[in-house]
Image 1 (cartoon, helix red, strand yellow):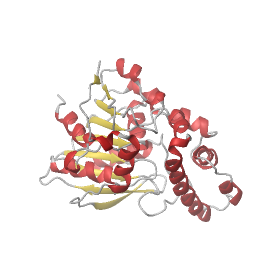
Image 2 (tube, one colour):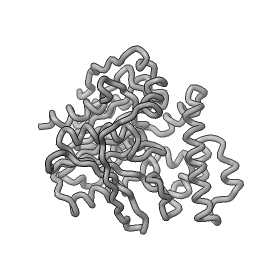
Image 3 (tube, one colour):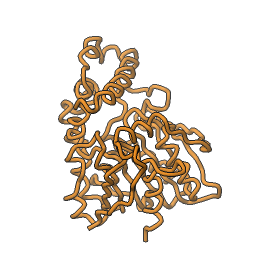
Image 4 (tube, helix red, strand yellow):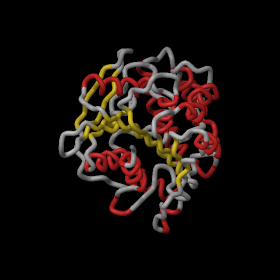
Length: 320
């Protein structure tokens, strides 16, 4: 049964989930990473910006990194992970989801927790335009849900994808939403909503016939945003339909690539349904680790290298 014991035991302050989360998102700085941007065109006329960083010596291994809600490829959890992969001989392709690279995407739609076609497009691009025979996927939060759903959907996964790591993943989106709407997470939810609404106002200027001032005024919670924009822009009936169809937990049973999921027990964003013990028990490709500490995409550790950055490298190095 691939449920792993954990050895993560951070300093006292970082045993507080909120402290760990805030430090990772607001305080941590990663120096020494050099990124090169490449834009790829998508079949629907939109684009993705990829931020590349490279190992010291030529390699046939690459890691695709996917950020979380309203993140980008410059967030410390992405740059820190990229730097550690590079140091250990793995190139990195850090994906900016549509509208997250500093430039608004062209279409009314953007990205969401269950959007796997853009990840598939990046994988296809790497296979046809680059010279990699070992591809690793690593996603954080929303990006982790995308990784897990992609691997478990009913389609052929390229043989070059050798492993995946998913960190702080809301495997059940509604369970996570319930937690985010609780008072303990009010400041996080407010920050997410503010960023999302600001982007929606830009969308409104692009597509005034699709978003009204009243629509924006009606967004009080994150669920409202998903009812008014996310669901409608991406083909779902409403927010609940979006959560049901896009949650990765239902896809875990079909994953057939070695995959490590790390969700901290004190992650205030995750509800009980985000810890898929039963699915892991039934699938030998799935590995679950539930540290007591770590917060949401936190996992502070010594020398400015997080526990999950170290753990990801150990996981791929131990593959047969």
